[in-house]
Length: 155
Image (cartoon, one colour):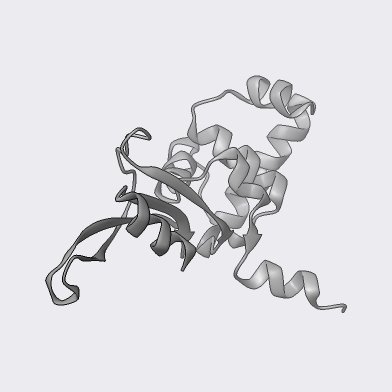
């Protein structure tokens, strides 16, 4: 509700970015006149998958704190980080340097990612990460899905 109140007060649209079922979804919430409220403000909400060329000067961008990684939910936090960096075209050496791990460790993560997702092509892995709009910081989001349930199940 606070987002809706802010939109009504400022008259400035907001973009909410989140990951749902392994795909990036962006919801644009824009203020508009509400004739039935006589001078009141209504909010139009449009959602779409993929990138949104939101200009931060025009839109306030809000990142969701939760994620439904869908098919990517089988990956560990570190594997999601590695996958997001593969998406950006980084080499294994560059990823290893950024994450302060050995090249061999990163290669093991990449192999594990490929096995879990059933994809051996680096290009296809990058495409899956692109569909999810996966960024490095997304790996630390609270999960809505199976890994969250597994983590809370004390087997």
